[in-house]
Image (cartoon, rainbow, N blue to C red; front, side, top):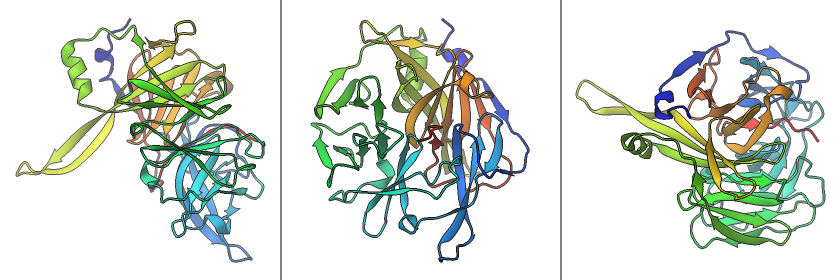
Length: 360
């Protein structure tokens, strides 16, 4: 095993100085939403928008085709993204909608589905969303969301007139994602500092917990473990296309800038390192690994997802693509953090997320 801590200081940058390219229809691929802008007005009085996206395969900025923004989505806040779909909330009445507006390869009019009223005002900044299918029209498709730290909420858009709320015996870990497992037909999330896994079986709506058991931890000095303890860490479950389960620890370190009087003027963070654990099929324990083979993991304000790099030429296998803080990738075998700096002025999206390349 490579020495873990000696790997995390490596840093490189990448920048493709291309002007944004416009496509009438983009191919299915993982894209990062950088920004959206209003470019005109339709004959019906609606806004016409397009989206600037980062393509990690080419490291270039691309533009989607122009679309008419549905009236229901005007001024709405994005709560989360999953399976290429986005859940939005109306800031005035807290109504919820599900839309495929941000899929750049969709050339037809954006679809909007109304979701049941929550019954309470969600905490927008801490929301997480997961869909059980990329086709919300399916009768059994379930939308799950974490709108605050003590409730897990689920509904089936085609069946339910209200959400079902599950009260947890302790707050959900606020830095944890929700993940739907196609293999197990269950939702997973981390809780209690990542020491336990919560799961909701969608077949019987039963919520349960189990202790996470970690094996084969990296051999690093105690001082280096203490350094990692000073980092802000988030936890993410992600499932591969073949059904393998991974648990990712994302470490971000805070830095500050001082003025001449040694007063702190600014505090920022950057990605420091990752640890990845693969579930053992027999023991169900989580084993540390620096090799996920042909796979790539995508982390942001979206449900974490995993793709085969060979299916999308240009992606670097054995890597984690991340956004906020910064935009970059982390190569697991070498421990190299590679920062991407898209050219031009790009106002960061309110809640930057990767768009899963899954069409209906």
